[in-house]
Length: 511
Image (cartoon, rainbow, N blue to C red; front, top):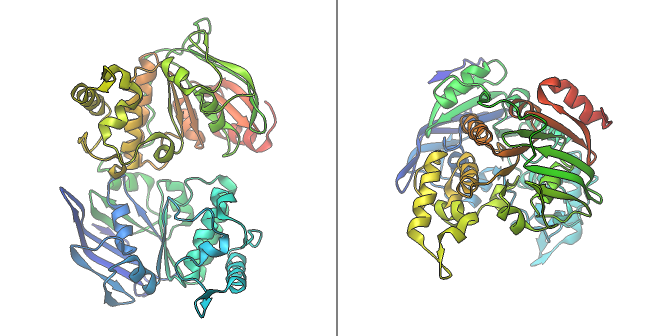
């Protein structure tokens, strides 16, 4: 283990020593050490499955340790429940925000510790205190009486942070807080984190984006295979190559595999053809073709219409105008069944809510689009279904290799592989990928890039939506820059650079 010397004599607010947590058949944490000081932003890095989620659930009191000790302000404590953790001053904001959509902002902020007198809720006091907290966060424009379900993802996150402050939290854990935010919203989040740290609040920050760690972090702890392989690293001074080596056990960069086939010639008939596709208020007059073996990238800000475009191509949304054709055959408007039957597959942005049956086993999630292949007299034949799914899961390296394991228990990278395996089993001809590496660690990300390349090299037409310009440029043969629901640029990916893409996105004018 490496350790960066720090001359500051500040005693840790939270200290975890030799933390062990075991689940049936899995040792999730195997002697983890962590020290977090008041007023610092301490970043947790590690691949999916490294133990980050388990560790923060120990901090939150959701899991109890099997061995090791936790010290709070120098004193041993038992974080025996989420309530116990909150009483100590530890609040956790999970990636999947636990807000109640039909309650107001103020009610959500004080949920579980309502302001009451003589058994009656004090609505006026709740609204006043909620407004004070929102003002402290610089978001007084959010009405305390507004229903949370009407807020954007960024607004809901602000409410979650306000809830943590309402508990007078001294340490706030943030799990992938920027995953659903656009650039401006991320900068606002960073400002809030900076302000919290300046006020003496400790922040444990989890992100797969190394550029965020550089911007927001003070120190880093790296987890690998349930162990802390480095603790207290300088967030700004530690080389990226060293961080990646610690996370993966090998030297690796954002590697985009080389193409085995040449870019399809323009005279080759497209597999996917989109003409004049329009949905009022979302996007208008979208035209593009994707040929066999070609990867098209859609770049743009969150809200530019990218996700809506691929969902409409897939039939999950109805177009107001335009048409989608696969191999020359026009698909019925708004028919997912027709799209799937024609060989179109979609890995959606919100894979947990839109793509996966979280409580079902891996093999059933993989076979979902191909059930007719395994049906006889109206009944599914489990043995061939399971066998076929296992073969495809092995091809894409789903880990652990347990077809009966509930998908909910897999890491983000492996959940994404399950979705890819679904369309491999279905022999799809057109694959739509919406944010395929969001919430995926650097090792799994590289594996997913390789899988996408292999599919293209086998003749599949691929469309990739990504908020990361580097990813779009690295994967795609051709790129469409989307802004305000319109195509601002359509051209070869090797003829445009990241700065030009960003200029187009920000300017919002056609090239």
